Amino acid sequence: MYDKKEFYLVIACVNLCLLSLCLFFFKNSFLNIILSFELAFIASFLIIFLSFKSYEKNITSKSHDIKATLKEPLFELKKIKKNPIFVKFYVKNDDLRPNSKEKIKYMVWFFSISKILSYVFLVLLFLFLNKNGYLVVGAFLLGVAILPLSVLVLTVKRVR
Image (cartoon, rainbow, N blue to C red; front, side):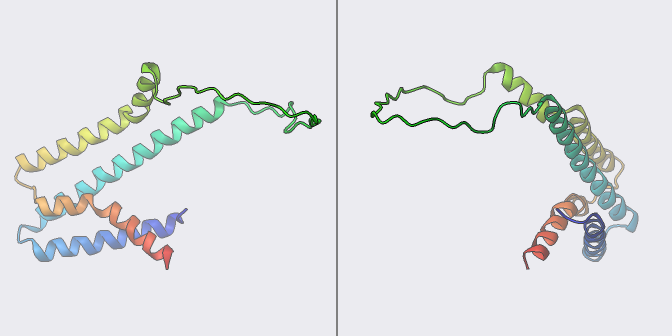
């Protein structure tokens, strides 16, 4: 796992680098580039953060449901008989496909309200910037790409 300070420092560095690239390459006004870039970053960060919190909540709720009891022995010793045993194998049709109840449960896990609202926020933000003439598409896309690029930088740094 990454250190939080290191992760936020890499995010800030990538943010500044990409923002300087946006200001250098795009010839729009300074305010339009900053708004498109930073608001896209905030929206994408919100999506990832709320997805993580939703996943964390689901895992902790599942882990509280499991009650581990060690009253039963972990292994059993059996005496081996000297007579040979003939084993019959039966073909069991296990497709491991979830039934409809499990599908609904997994769908609710994946589509949490907070995650859907954060995606709606991203779309509304895009439409708001477009309607008011503040949208710079390249800056918006680079703003969304900050977090994946930060994770890529940290991963490459860890591999070395």
